Amino acid sequence: MKKILMTCAVLLVATTGAQAQGKDAYHPVDQAWVTMNTEMLNVELGLNDDQKVKVKEINERFTARHQDMTAAVPKPTDAEMSAQVAKLMAERDKAMRAVLNDDQYAKWEKKRHKGTGDLEGVEKEKLEQKD
Image (cartoon, rainbow, N blue to C red; front, top):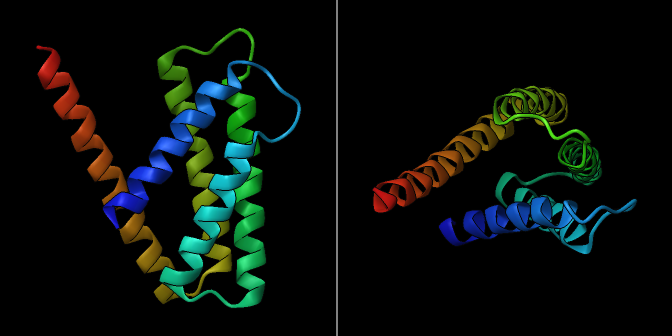
């Protein structure tokens, strides 16, 4: 599970870096992340066919919006970017809530928060190593 989450994180970071180069369409890494994340959720949450299509659409929509944010000129400050990402994630959570049933949403939310905690721990370790 940690390997999958770390792979997703690496793909997301790679996506963000690639966006700085400027492009009009999805980067292959973005599309790979959307597909991988949708399949992972399908396996872990037992999505039905309709849910799978809707979750993929949500992933595509919010990946595109994230791309737009990171490609914005002038670049937002870190604080502005954090606020924009938090707002975007809240909107995505609301969209996921509308698609998933109560049990699936609870599993997704637990998995999502666990993954975030794992990544925060990695970032914290990196900061401690720099000191």
